[in-house]
Image 1 (cartoon, helix red, strand yellow):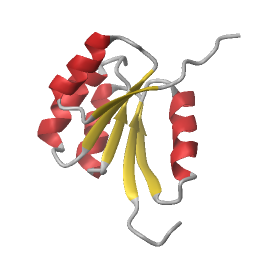
Image 2: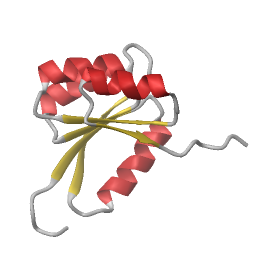
Image 3: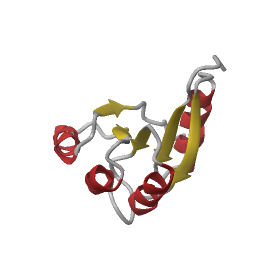
Image 4: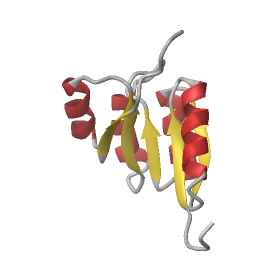
Length: 115
């Protein structure tokens, strides 16, 4: 920890292994704290509205509510939280839809290999 302000992050992804891995990477930075995790878009909107983190990392494809719809709702319910879509799905339409919904960015993560 550097003693400065902590960056507060919410993780919204239906894959618990992805959430766990991203949490480990972020928290190893020393100035990042994960304030909560959610397994679908609806839970993510509720979590972010309650915790109001600086950043929400949101998967694009999830059950109950997808990341695009969740991003649009977060713009209303938690406008100070920046949303970055973090996904393995490499489709231009997702990028454009996410930006139109209010996402600040779109990160393509490495695809897990199935063995």
